[in-house]
Length: 260
Image (cartoon, rainbow, N blue to C red; front, top):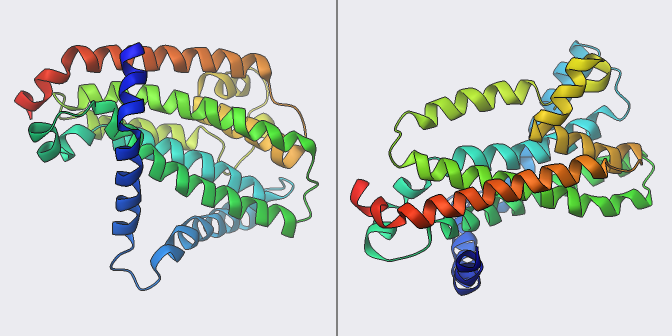
């Protein structure tokens, strides 16, 4: 892991510049420019709130804020996982011509996803104020929850990035799994009330997306403490995944250019 931290220190400026360039290129040809980063999550929140709040009559308190917090966490998780699979192949020109630790590519991508998640969380706070959600000191625990979410997704992303070089069907398989996780994560419903008992308990603990969403809602909407025991457990799991991903990439990174 010492090599990992040395490389991250060496290449972090490149990762930041690359992330900025990608964000600029996304909106370069758009009339609304950076406003799309606000419009997109806001529109999805309205759609889910109408369909599941009005049509299906969900009685969850502060439902719009509930959905927005869930979407912020899910979009980051989904983008990190799905975007990592073909990351090395999509950067074929860079990988084959210049040496760069492959996890730096994922780190650069993650910065763009973090930026977009911050925008979504900002919209969530705006909604909370609009809906008169009581804001408490528990908001400070957003930082450790997001850190755990980042570590988990970064670890999974590195592993998928490695296997995505040789396993061509991994992208399709990942999309299927992510679709299943989407419906089992409680983005537009409360797992505790909709799935009471053992099933709900398991979903909130073995599904990292559902777990992090639930913990974020605890500290933002419900004003309660997060589950420190499970946060610590998922942090350990995430660090283990990161260590495994770094080991796999260091062991095989010289062969990536030959394969792609």
